[in-house]
Image (cartoon, rainbow, N blue to C red; front, side, top):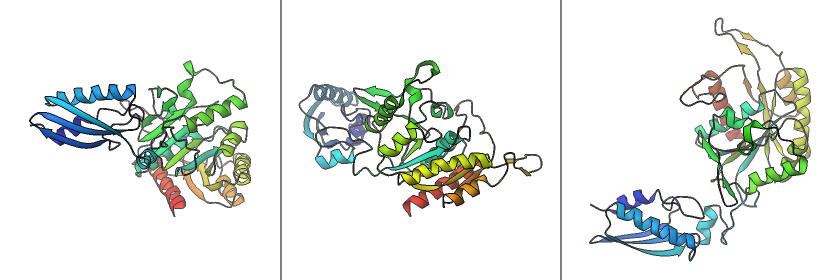
Length: 349
């Protein structure tokens, strides 16, 4: 028997041509009437009177007939301005940018003074942990020269491109965009500062992000052009500084913290990565890179230590390969979960 529920379920696969979302997901199905095999449907879309509407009409008719309708009648209307705004599109159809006023996404920049301290590992695990806690999360791999996020998260697919809009890849509940998606065969990037700044701006303005609570920015180490561009682009940002316990790493990381302060961005705290190695045989901690660097850095920047993360390696799942993502029940994964909750508490308090 043909029912409204059966028709709605079938229409979940039909996407609004301009928003690239299911017409059911955007509440575009206004009315369904069924009588003697005739189905009458009122549909709201972002633009009426276009070639895309005709194509959508054919797709809806075909889909509804497949579930048992003898004939299908359609009426179209436009989504209201309020509905368009909620969907991240302004009333004249221009997609919103994450840099627009009124966007409620919280930007969290993860940075360090030098390379090799595990900044990207912290970024991807923070992002996935926030998603596991029910937050809507995205991550931009802004480390243009040393992009690694797709590999760390086990991403093999590429983002879809439709017109001038880029659709991020979704992995572990996190929307992901990276320079690595647009480089062939792991080729080196030899662009100069202005070109890099333009690409970063595109990540904010031309990517079709779904609604986000948090956007993690995995910044390149140091205080160079890319980091400065990001600081200048964002209206406001929270910042997490990653260091190891080694005094030199902490000393260099302080520069990144000072940069955040000078650009009026709030420092959320310090993450001391590679804080120790815990022996599986004895349970004893060995402080391979010394002690105290994170604490001294936090004191200098007048902030807190969000987490002290030991040396370790996630358990590898060959069927769902992600070489740098810790499971939530892993001992280090639990540390990341607690860290993510601290971040939420600090921002949403």
